[in-house]
Image 1 (cartoon, helix red, strand yellow):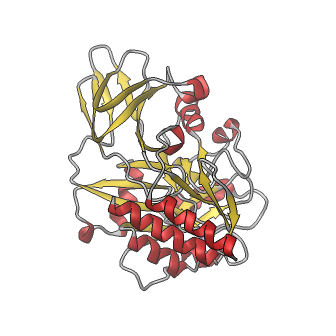
Image 2 (tube, helix red, strand yellow; image 1 turned 180 degrees about the vertical axis):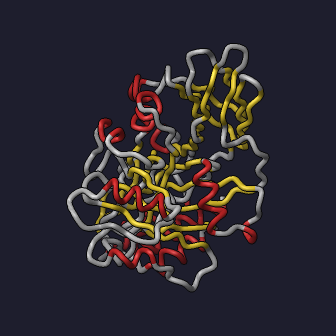
Length: 373
């Protein structure tokens, strides 16, 4: 008992006096949706979802699980956590198991927008967002599920392509009508930029790029999207949220490990042949194209403007798309709360089994402490 008390005291000291670990592992990433380039005989056209002047950012979570499938928290608890964290909207996307229909139901009792959803798990995983019904039986109903989502004005996204059942590149050409791909999910630390760049480079598709938390056993803030809008929160509706996502008017945000984090806010504008990026924080800015990207060059890809608040990229005749990535490095200790009742301090100080109730309280304590900094 004394040993446990001493360990908990050490954890609290580490939380109050964080250890500096500013490196790749403590990064927070912000991604833009692709800007598509058309070069004609006498003009360059850049099709950008960021051409409008947006005054408001709204946090939206598109991938969560509850006790209605394999999550640890009731739907009302998941909604309450995100309401406390100033989210505008949350999609509950329980797995298509015995109680699949419950993920379409609004838990009620909250002041944020509920988006009905599902995670299809037969075959390669896919999210259905804003759907009204679920085709869940059978070995391979993926195309039917995509078609039904489109009929219901819903959206479909390939989920965590590098985990659970990794998705081969070839799968993206087997189905038609899907909307995008999960470029980051914090629950499994799946960073799938190579998949996004493969689709953009090799397939004749224009995917939307989202990030999420994929909440199961921990309500967490590791990934989400920031919708860009000219409307304040009180004027936003379910239709506004779904429309902004469908048009790509959002930035994807991912941080590792899965704790509360403050991403960079980006202002992306286009002036003739040049894409301009402004940030409210000092960031590394990458311009990723069909010529230089994570699919062609793997993890060795590195083409960034370092430690800056602004950068520009002028397209050339070989470009078909440009996407922007901004990286913020944090200077405090990383606390990783895993999906099991185990807490790991990164860099690894020790691993200790503790009751989940205690772990939850420590998570909330650390999150609130971080917000005050």
